[in-house]
Amino acid sequence: MRLLVAMTLVFTAETAAFHYKTPLTQQELERFASYEILVTHDPLPPAQVAYLHARGTKLALYEWAVAFYDATKTPWQKSLRRDTLLNRTPLRGHLGSPIADAYYYDPAMREHAEDRAKKLASRLRTIGYDGVFLDATTSHSVHPDALAEYRRRHPDAPYDAAFAQFLKRLRNEVAVIVTNQGYREANDVLPYVDVDISESLITYPRDGHYVLRPWNDPNDAWNSTLPLMQRLIEPAQKKYPRVRFVHVNYVDDPKLAVQVLAISRKLGVEVFITNPSLDQ
Image (tube, rainbow, N blue to C red; front, side, top):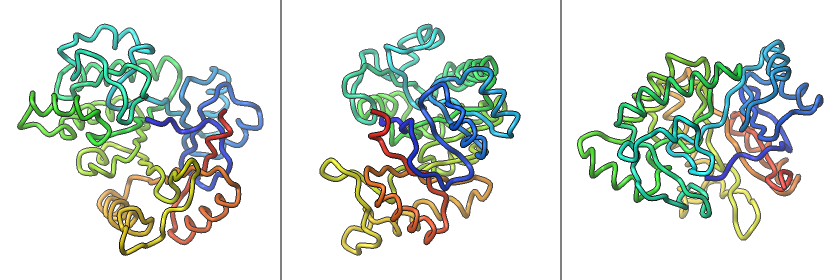
């Protein structure tokens, strides 16, 4: 699971911004105050929360949707019995870190469907945040070993339908829910979401650098920007018009950022462009 980077090269999205270094500088405070939602990885200081709220910006806290790391687990995560998780021994890799131990939630368990929503909402109220960004959402983000265990335990309860029960309860507790690629399981995720992001549908990594995806390669449609937007995003937008979509893309060359902006205007979409090297 790659985190969205802390520093931003170009903004065009008006709905949501992502910034993972805290606290913010005064210049950053002014910049982010123009957005409807700011996602941070860690809580901002109370004074900065109050400043952004006064300017009309809502705040959402980062949360890994399907799992947690053993090294950074919260008191509630520490309290979970191992039989309420999908793996008794730690897992690494897939969309998680290759060097950190992770444990995956079983969304069909009461502890996830009910307790997690309450605990998360309580923490958000404590820090003055309005909601949460659930990164790496849906069964597509679950480690294959953990997903196999879920299906063994619950053959008649699809993972994403079970996860939707958590989202339903969370929707009653918080004002803002942002997801990452919830469109992949739109019927289960998007009814409860305010903003859904796509990641790397215009640029993608190749040979150590970020480059533009093909625009519409008939021999490689599932790696081409236009078919991806038409097949994945547009149907979800039409079915769930209340959900706002923001397209996050990475660049390591300012010239590439200009091209991404041009493509976003051509598509008529909101794009958030970041440069991962700025976080090093």
